[in-house]
Length: 309
Image 1 (cartoon, one colour):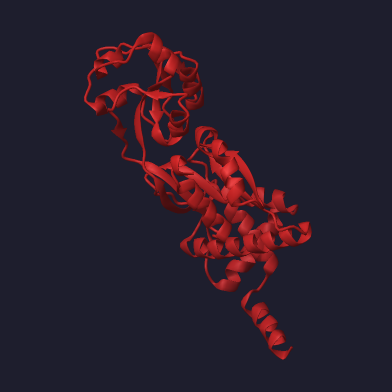
Image 2 (tube, one colour):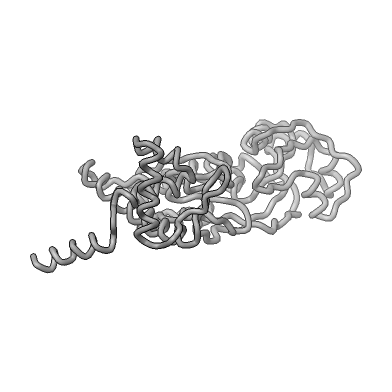
């Protein structure tokens, strides 16, 4: 009992205020004193006092206070990573104990296309692997700051260099033309890339993630079409693939997304030519999130080829 008491005194000596740490975490996560105050139900002045007290206790600056914004200093970033991870673990323990259940919720952030074509068709397999897992899917742009969202794992397409989390390669990607079996039966199989340029093409808008469009694909494949014929333009990739499934024309198939549709025969690949893109899919763990066995199992499941599950 004596050792426990001395340990408690030691924590109190090293950690000047748990309240200050809680309010610092909210400010760092939300990048705003005002938003942190609203979330915590206190005044902005109270939050500012707690953060200032923490800075004075440590003898360092935790934030760069800019004209209309704030930014963590390097010391503040280091403290935030530790505090956020610790609070996440404490909150998780409270949640499990209060619910009296072994079930664990995991929040997975992806784009609508990745969720629709890659994750949802494989949920039965995931349930067999992790029957106690409660999965919550959230759709967001790849550029959304993970520190402002309650996300455990995010899937992003890009170069793997982001400031709000630790990334690891999920898999690479290649792109090729696809259509429905009915469209192929009615129109015949194109023999060359120039034949495809004359087909009714289904286009999806380029996004901030850097997905290629038809013109870029043809150039990368070595073709220089004089003019492309678009049967339909869509703002969402999910709509473009749905249009192809309904026989409206030819769409660009991103292999990691449409492989399940190809396997089931709902889509067919038109030519052997494909373009390997320079960027890849990555799994990103937000700073401050604990990597648990459930997290690792989920990453392994995401990384596995659809065909092998």
